[in-house]
Amino acid sequence: MTHSSEPFFKWPGWPHLRFAWLLSGITLLWFVIVYGGSDALTAHRTLRIRVHLDAELAIPFVPEMVVIYMSIYLLFLAVPFILRRCEEILALAMTLNLVVLVGGIGFLLFPAELAYAVPKNIGYLPGMFRLADALNLTYNLMPSLHVALSVVCIGAFALRIAGIGKVLLWSWAIAIAASTLLTHQHHLLDVLTGFGLGVAGLRLVYLKRANFSKDQNSTTFFTM
Image (cartoon, rainbow, N blue to C red; front, side):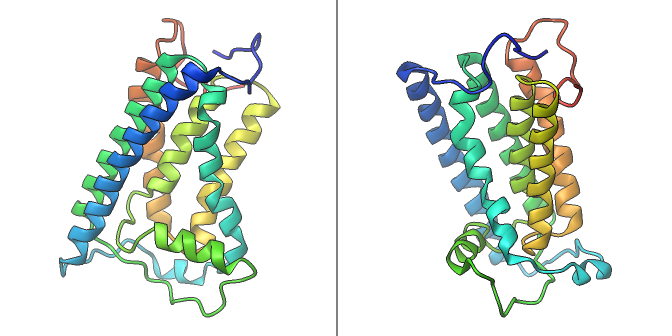
């Protein structure tokens, strides 16, 4: 299902924006509690589980990919301008919150730490890279919530567009996933589990809660 008769990006009106911002604030607070709490708890544990392959340590460090990495925040800002029904906003918030909860459980079950060497040269955008690195905290690796949350947003957006627009959106999701590796913020297993978690959230929560018609196919966020 795509909404071809409606513009993809449109001013939604102030009432919708206020509703979206309220849910965004709640979601952000939940994220801070779960993500920050998981990292703090793991910091006081000695157990660390290996989540990387030796071959991954040869992945090149490309600090300029932080621009793509940080583009996740553009997705969050775009939400009320693309998802212009309250049911969609509520469904997205529920999906993101559940994904964050599952991610937090994963962090506690699989306490991990990056195996990459600390970079000596952080490129031409040191301020942006340091900000991204600080926001990422230290121990929350598997699943990558950066990837999972990106996939949820892009999957929801992809339901409202067809053709090349859908291809571009999913290319963006893949680029964000790749950026987590090339900026050495995550390992491959983190990315794969994060992508899977995002897709599961879309299928099991978003599509069921966004009040789509009964003929909504559960894979239309992928199909053309």
